[in-house]
Image 1 (cartoon, rainbow, N blue to C red):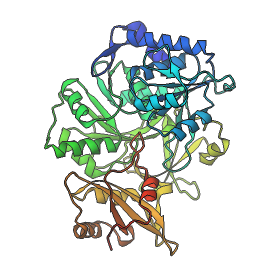
Image 2: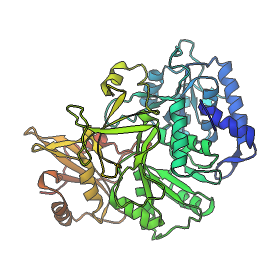
Image 3: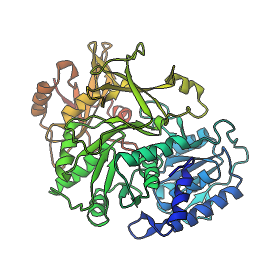
Image 4: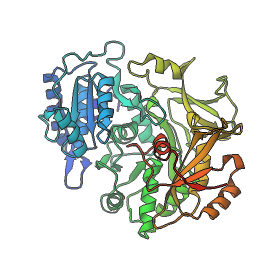
Length: 508
């Protein structure tokens, strides 16, 4: 199946098998034909509002058929969809709308009270598509011209966990190519059903779940948000064969099962598990694999590459946490952060990427684009990794999150892995804080398993046995829950802000 734009993937299936069910909801199902009616209605409304080539359409959403229909309709009229998670704060939504210079804003009010609240605040009115609301079109919004107008499919806003959010330009060719290779990497086909709770405002939900399923003709068991009880019900009763998400999704699911004494959940069709969009530690990997009796696959990708660069191989069982091997069309190299020279296998450095999925840049931000692009078309990711002897990529941490302690590099991911292996810890986050002597302190934040308490002496012994002295946390804060973005990344800056000056369990 050859495609140049996102909507043509859908249109091909609509023409070939209109009656085939594409989306399964708890109380309804949507065939390609039924979804096609929504797409056509949304397309007509966009055209009537003057939305066309190179315009941006902001979609404040949680997952639902109407959101999918909007993505496809925006593609049909030649505009760019700009997804924003409805659970963002008002100031964040307003900033994204301004950054995108959006012609019109839509809200999935039918499934999301958060989206409804934004719609009311911004004076939106009902759309001709039931379940959606929209603002009046802005006459002063300026459409993008050549050469980007016909190549860009969407703007994906970065999460802002390490800096000011930016608008990543994602091309039709990049995301449709990734959808094809992603589907091939897991043998996705028409008989598969993927559990679709990942926000389609993020590249993981948009590319790995939606576009890959459109390539393969697979269907979606769609939910507007993650609920571990519903996941287990869908696995048992709704023929889910593929479950994907960030490591935090699997940590919450494993914790839910352990709290209720669920050893091996019924999942008769499940054949593929995948954790992405964040580092995976071995303790969680083993917990999930023991619970489901399947390998937990892993990969490495980012918005700037329209999906994954590497994925573990389908028939390969690994005991490590490698992010796998290169997908078709992608390249990576490990470089010295200071010089940019390539490092040999086994040496840690900054991951550089290039290939078919690479962004053409950040929207209207030449300074931010030039800060990450390197000679030869390479993108400097800001992630630290190393190439294994077999060519697999291992992702260690974020370069900006690396802590300098007594002249030594401390990678938060390594400390988090040791903390996660402690019996009472459900999940940990580690960050650095400047100290009075010019050094950096290592601070840890831990969410405990249900009913557990922290034995500080036992934890101290565990850390001393597994970490060099300079890597050991100066303090450990017990938190009820780790704050996260909508796509499962821990907000470490928020943890530091909330716990600034607070006493915690000393470890030394």
